[in-house]
Image (cartoon, rainbow, N blue to C red):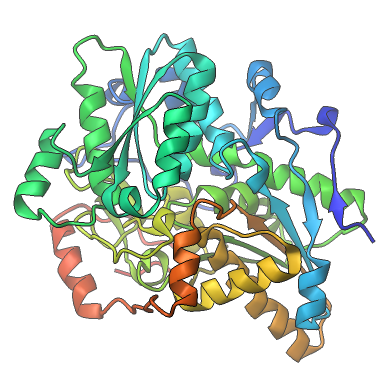
Length: 462
């Protein structure tokens, strides 16, 4: 039995997988304020054209440039672990495997796309990148990537995480980035929010508005915006995770995976692991694929499938996605990376095609699972990742009850060594579970009244 499965560097995937080529129904386009499809040229003030080309591509496989691979070799291929000690603790007949993305320089999966995005921006002649960050994983990852490329990095960090997670701010400073609390007084969007809600904990939607505003108003034209999740090209870069996992499972003779699990806030780490297996499911494989979110921010499980803006100030195009409304400000749970009102259009479409089955779990159950994982496997996981582990434990117990041998694969998307305050609050009994009331959802969704509606696919509901 192999506890850790490695690939040699010459076995690293040389192409990213683009699920848009294989979806049963074609992707619905992003829309402008007039309700008409957004053209690639309209996105040029925000993103470099080489990334826009990936965003709209229908090619199944996209080559990874050799220069990007040379950077990825710092931590990739990442190991695949057999969670044998967790299996023994649970007494389950299931075999549990996890892809360990905590080994990256920034401690999470985010570095897979930050390196790619910074490289493509560099090729396009960009001198500065602005972005947002929730818990700080993405801000740290982009700060690292920009430091390698010699690009200036400006990060708007959601206020509640800015206050809760000071060490990630320091990580960004080490790599040369400028991190400010959002909403801030540096943008019109930030000033307007502060005037209305001076005590707001902030949200990713607000931080995105600030970052986009600073990018598009730069008079030099040498600044672009970078997003750590949600968009097609971001999810594309993350598929190296699932592609490596497939090779590693094949290496030890595991021919079939029964359950694939990852947490989902904007959708990137989930898509990165799951999309190569969704491809198998499209082609007839029997796999249960589960994205997991907080019960307090139930974008996939309670948010309707709509056209909505990705940011609060409505500076971004309308995207077809599950959403709680762009004005939604989630409760200040410690899983800051999962506090987002929308879900990636590609992930949303797989939900509506019936290819994946989302699940929501309360944060106390997630922290309980994280502590079990730390005591058995030895890794203190990020609060976001704890949602995946909680679902893994649910599935492992289910396999025990059914007496079935299953293969469960999940993404250990990041470590929690910068998130220990959340663990302290859990041990001290200070964490509260919060079920988002239906009335609050209806109130938040008023912001999207009158916006276009996407075609409803197999299971989508308005």
